[in-house]
Length: 192
Image (cartoon, rainbow, N blue to C red; front, side, top):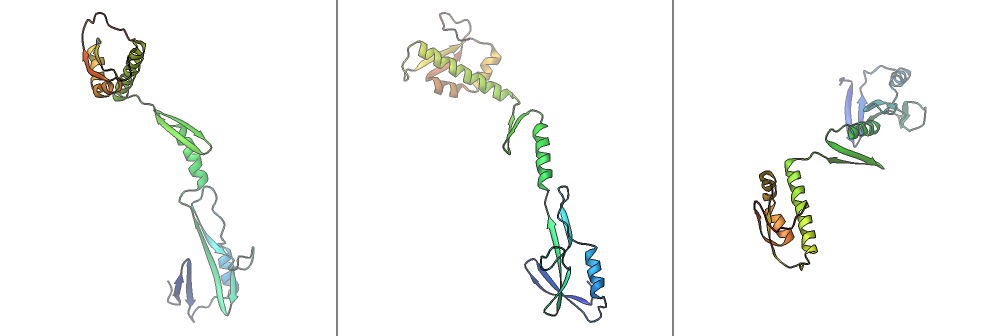
């Protein structure tokens, strides 16, 4: 900052400077310099705009005005973190380009669902399906809602290992006192 210009006081969003006695620019020269950098609003792809504007907000008015013997100029700064049109366009592009996700948008709301089937999800699905089938078998057998049962399953070792991690859940849901693996079951109810 020049020694001929001193910052005099600061208000919220306002800075006032006092120009010293050695300043020799004329009002038309200052007006011409300000006009070369007139403020224009940010365009959709622009994140910041800086320029001079009319102190009294009179469209196309002078950029330098004398008020009470003081010369006033107004610098306007407009900033956008990211222009909204860019955010919207980028979000729409990203919403459609997420591998492994199912994405849907409606009325400005976008929902993304991870459709990757992990081993844990597959095992939980298997356990839930077994609960559903066993509940239907209880109903078909005419069992009371509070009747406790014992369940034996004849299946391969991989399926059993998958079900075993949800054994407590399965037993609680179907009111089973036990759930065990048994090869070669005879006289059993077949649940496919």
